[in-house]
Image (tube, rainbow, N blue to C red; front, side, top):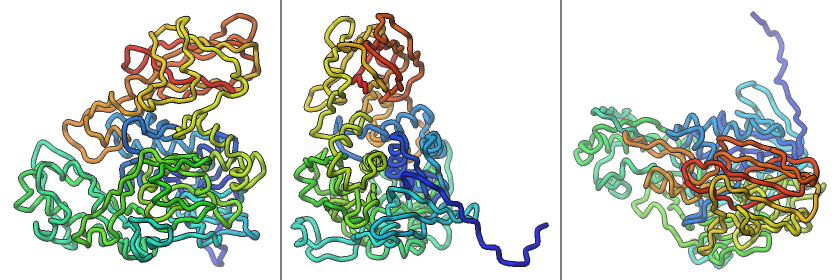
Length: 598
């Protein structure tokens, strides 16, 4: 037994890093991984026990992004999707949480602080020196000192702590000339949602609602619930939304309570009303989210503010580093409380570019951000806020942060002096940048590629998906030799390939579009199929290198590959590279998009 007779306070642990990332939703996860893989030492501070943000097992919102064929986000987003398909054939959210968790802990350059809430920042003029967090599990303070800080918290916690300029609410129509903005500016936002999931059984499952649940009738619920068909089993109940007329941050606890009252009341209506009970009798309320998912709060101000007309003009910026393609999906601020439509989808092109200048602070020199808090108006944010878009924004921010450390410059300095290199690095990491093409690296100057002796220069065109009907893809027999030949032996640090991962998910076992966009579950049907890796993805292959002596050396014998982007570090001279594809996960031919060297 330990007796304490005096106050001793709490321990403070100090961490030194190149890059500090606040928040580990999709944006924060990918910012941290990208920075770490580009050589930066990264500390991630996240206030929950699991990572993934709105896509985590605590909230369970579907990951969505650009709409349409051939628009699916690649890079780290596709890496995560394929890892989940490899590990999680039933799309179980507990396993999903382990997949997102391992994406961070498997990186040796990342230190992860979970259950740690950022509560203070130390400044030196216009620079952040350190941030301080309280870790509830260990009852310790953590101070992180870093060169670059990336706020991916969604709520922009570093804005009030550092004095960074930010906006909150809806701009009036006149400020940017946005036709879909309200006539007068206000403090309204989109609201928060508590989701729930249901499971189908072979027998009848009763349900008794808590006495504090809202009691609904057909008349009181008709503005949200459809009693026709099977909507109840195909929905994720995003429309159970409140908070846009309140403070999404300051009123979060009260909003959660009100949302839970509605959640249990809606399911009570589904299960026990005369109109619905026969259709729902074999369905069980399987899970309820007690952590609301937020859509909107603070938005930072950067060197550029993305607007409605930037979106509709396709965002063809010179500093384009990511893209969107979700409609401008503006939710009514009253949410569930109004009988008006829950949301209005204003058309947006897919894709539209998002510039790098929206991803760093206008007035804090070493502050970056990614996610729903980037520098944009409310109307533009209504499209950019979806998580696949947030994720590729995070990868851009992490890559730029590592470059800022490497070149000892600021995020703005990357825009001024290194933006072309940033874009090239992103494309080399399989991030599609619309209206751009990946260049051959200097080491590849003069390279030729053949497959089975025939020309295979398509592997050098710098495009890794179907664009305007051109598939940019090499298809060949298994066992064919794909040979890349340099004019002479050259020093090579890395060899990479981009394989076909069926980004449209044509080989997906479900016709349901929701499973094709991202392998996350909505509800649980008895007849749900198992989900596996896409048929065309390369499964087994061998890689040989000729260092200049005319002899092939087996360098990699890969089995059970599950990555679209596959890279191998190389230390030495290379004159020829030979890829021998042996088997895919289901396709009868080998599918390869690109070969890269640097």
